[in-house]
Length: 233
Ligand code: URA
Image (cartoon, rainbow, N blue to C red; front, side, top):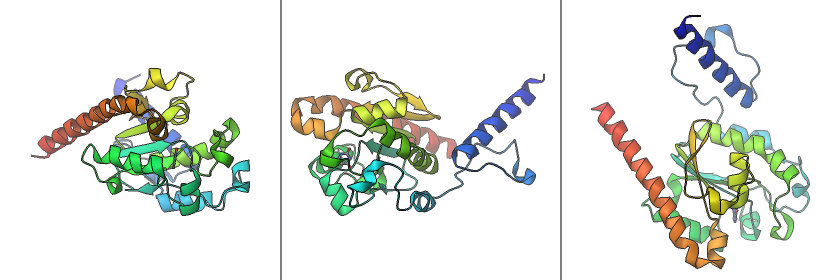
């Protein structure tokens, strides 16, 4: 078969897969334009939040006070994904606002980005009781919503904070010590795992490695932006 046709079919297949992932199972024939550049977001974060509703899909709903959906820039180039809300987040309904959150804010600012410019969320949106680890069924229930957030935002880079975030996003059980500091791929988005800020509070001597990881992120974003600027001249 002609190479171009093969490519068109493969593009169309990925577009249909993408729509399926967004919960859309049919499209009018007039919308199938194979020469359009990649798929554009068809949902907003507000719509994803609405779909999540007063979620009772897993047992975490029983003890939670608030669903902590996420916050930040809907068009962020950089997204941070943590594990799950803790006490302060559950009370305030915002991600990373406790001690670990304050450290995360500093980490973000260390690469000259204001916190509001990135998007921050978690693998699970409800606080696990006594801050225990999220369980596989809980991670599973939340996963479609996390993927929708990622597909709406379409960041260039996701920084996965800690073991649960890295292992869930990369579908691996490799340890965070081995995963951190390298770029991986998730649907064309770069994923770089690093240590969780709560781990850094207990092990401040590991901050240096996170700094190295943040420098890699900043370097990639700077290069990418420079290339885009020179393209537009
Ligand atoms: N730890 C997390 O993983 N997420 C938060 O939102 C707060 C602490």
